[in-house]
Image (tube, rainbow, N blue to C red; front, side, top):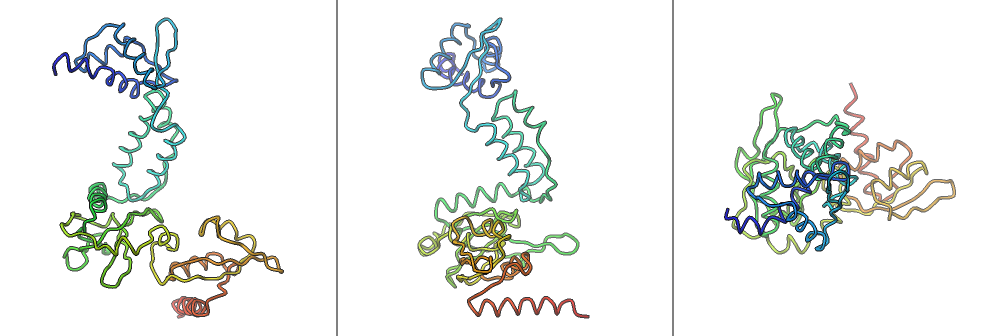
Length: 328
């Protein structure tokens, strides 16, 4: 690169060096900055570095100088602060759809956003999750292609597979591709899903992104009703473990000691009404599915479905079938 062009980008390179190598724990000297600039093919004097840092400060960058035997600099304004980075690292480690190799790569990248000094401290204090990680390395590519399709309002195609008892991939539809209308992606129950609109029946279907292969953006547009008729946020709120079903307003009665579980499931805006016997009653919009009934069972006799009557009858049938499966 020509010397004139290198001089023009010199302040940007100094900013990159400060972000990568400095923080309040490990400030860097002018000599260190000059060395790194030289590695980029930029030769300049100390006074030039002082001038460029002053220019960056005037444009609002929080670059601080510690005056010791020599001037040492660090940058304070970062895209993420340390608590935010810790949360993101924990989320990456807990997500089982991210492969072990990608997990390590992402954790390292996130840690380095705090600067060299804090990065090593942060990584040394990370607790490794005992999370079962999947091995589909195509997950990044899948997410990227799906994102492009949603942005461009285009359909996507992909192969979809399950595993057999030998842990071999078995492709659905005899290996023929699916063609779907992508609406949104959602992380739920430790898995990453694609929400799609099925125009033939006017409903929603979910697919696990880690079970996809050969994802491609199609030329066909997503039909307008896929975007007009689906309230994604409301849909996700009523789901139980991504199992869809008929959306129904269900009334419950529960013991007061289940309030935490109820708020975790339905959110803090749910209205709780205390009954004369010390229990609580509430209503919630849910999609009726076996996973919904399974959730009801986790609260034992402390939670009871009051209505509608059809949901009560369906729950009784669910319990009857469950008991029959244990009869000898």
